[in-house]
Image 1 (cartoon, protein in one colour):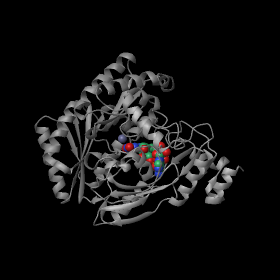
Image 2: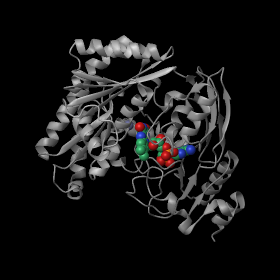
Image 3: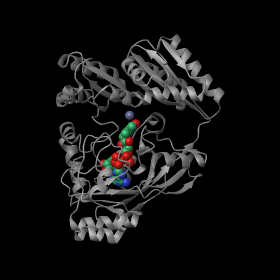
Image 4: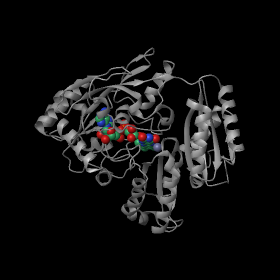
Length: 467
Ligand code: FAD
Ligand code: ZN
């Protein structure tokens, strides 16, 4: 055993320093696309141990890959193939430290699973609104480091908006204790915002203070059918006026998405066996009552139908039916995976330009790859689309993947032309590094590189990711 590993064992104990075959579960990304290599997987139990390990790595020049639930989709939390790095798993920092109901905050350690935090909040009669399909596995440290989005951003914002304070271990192994529960704090540069979304390249988040909200009394969902994304935008504006903060979800999906779910998950509800090209799942929440939310949903959808903003609607009559409609939305990715491999994009454009973007991108793809199928769905209320491209019906999915670079170029050029972002939710990781270089301005890239150099001059924090 090397001196370095020996020192790690002295700090953490032999059973928390994994080597050889024991590392395997930590080295492959969620989708199974890439397997890296590591000297060891280190599993500290608390902030002091994280700091001590980082000091050790800094003095030995060993790169560190912070890892939460490993559900990231851009190869950010797995090491490269060199075998030089250690994976630093935050899984054992999993305590909810405290809840302050009056301040509406919860203080949690970075390795807490998102669902665990939702449950702790609910137990205290509060809501922690961050919600992703991976919530049973992802950690809050990963959510903060990727500034995760999800399905409630429209009402509550991204993870960044839900965080008031952080505790961070710097690349030098010092601890910054910024666990403040303040909603107002204008005392110089906002270090918290620097670490959020940094994907582990500037330091290790070990704990956070998060915002809580009152729990809604009732939540109800409807699905509506309409012809175009432009119509969906008009419906969004209408519902925002009619429902205000009660509008908590607005998710777009195409006919193809519904058909894929019906084919691969026939046990799920089938709200529209046939119908027009686009569908929107609308969610309203009420702080009053079941009756209030149902009446608001029925009246606002009724007005939208009368105004010709949509052509048909299914309004859930119970919580179970609401969950059934959400399940349809949440199974689109899995249905598409069951149909074969595809080329994925996680993009955003200004909400007002979504219709134009979809039209332009589909037209450009149709010209270059006749018959290719676009599976487009996402968080329309946030301007965020999952824009996945699959081959023409009957064509080989494997062969189609060889067009990945050309297809990325078409889609991302259209995103750029419409004033958008090539990564709305999932981050950059190792997967989109080159795309970042292409689409960010030289000034922006230089500022990012200067921050990285200032905070991590040895370049030991997740090297090869983001920049
Ligand atoms: P990991 O994958 O372990 O790590 C992600 C990045 O953060 C890596 O760069 C890692 O180095 C870094 N990191 C992790 N922990 C720390 C820490 N404590 N300190 C510093 N750096 C750290 N994402 C969305 O935004 N919205 C969605 O709706 C969504 N849906 C998803 C659905 C499914 C089924 C899956 C598999 C993924 C989905 N994702 C979504 C992506 C993913 O779940 C999120 O990016 C999530 O925030 C990652 O958390 P994690 O704990 O798994 O992080
Ligand atoms: Zn998403």
